[in-house]
Image (cartoon, rainbow, N blue to C red; front, top):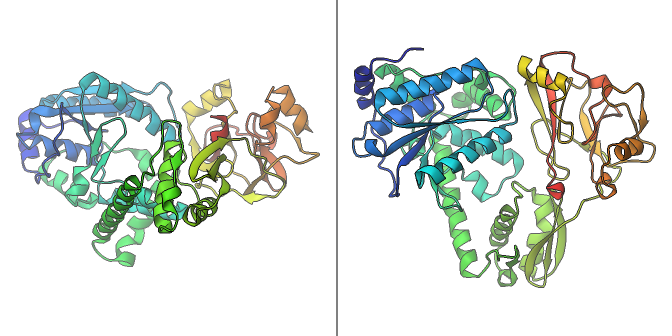
Length: 462
């Protein structure tokens, strides 16, 4: 894809509608640019502001998910920045091929943190727009998120390390159709990521669902309504957080939080304190049932304990604390829904495309089965439970089945963790146990678009 000449591109950028002025910040203004339509619009519209222009510094991270197409993205962004006269920093993911969205985000954030140290910027601009607000709200509502989760992504968000992320397209009230129309009218090209159209991620499926009938079901301009509601929710969350600080409900250096002042206060205030406390301990999007006994105890001035994503949270003596204890799950079977993390055991099942590059890695044994495996699409719903007496399992490559207990011992899995390993089943047969290869009967035989990726992320083992 060729760009217009620098003079033509700059003239086109000047025709884009102006964005709001950035908040005050020291250092350069970093702009995350993938090469897609959203980030190209963001960069060009920011560049059109002659006051902002000299402070811009583009950051592009190559996730190495799409092979040559990813390299073309990087070349496109570099050429775009050269035409606009904007410096550009490039980052490169260590691994390559398909990966979980959380893993890609973690690698990208690490690159941003490195650049923050090198450049000294306080403000990072990202190209989230109103459609992202809608998708986020639907995903978070389905998972039972708290106020902070439902308010994201915010137009301006502060982080504990001191930097802020500014999302001017949200602040300007822009949705995707308006961005595309403006780019086309100005003659500014962009890169297309073909994986965005594949139904392999929940966000992609929601995007396709909304495109097929969102406006007819919700009415014209529904993204603006979602954004307004998210802003109101965010304001309510900030008010509760401020009230909590006034009452002294803040985390100590030891990781505890005094909550005695919450006795007799609204339960919504106790919930905000608890979610902030859990966030400090790396626990996000906890379920309502796991929080209920804790918030009830805080408001009543009593005591309680509850397991939240494997972390035992205690309300004792007017104080919140955690005890990281490996849980024992027991024999009761629980449904494992595809696309939704199970916070009790840390399992996530996702529809996944095993492309040629990923298949080569799997064939060579580059990906250990400790936390993630890829299996053929199961013929029946997935369930999970704890270990049971008499469990037998035939791992991939094994000539026959063996006692699960013997397999775990042979793998040198510590005894104190064996009872905390979830057992994934399909049709009554064991499909996978973290730490072991998947079942022989779920073997992949080559690149597959409809495979299932199973991930285990257990807080109690770090």
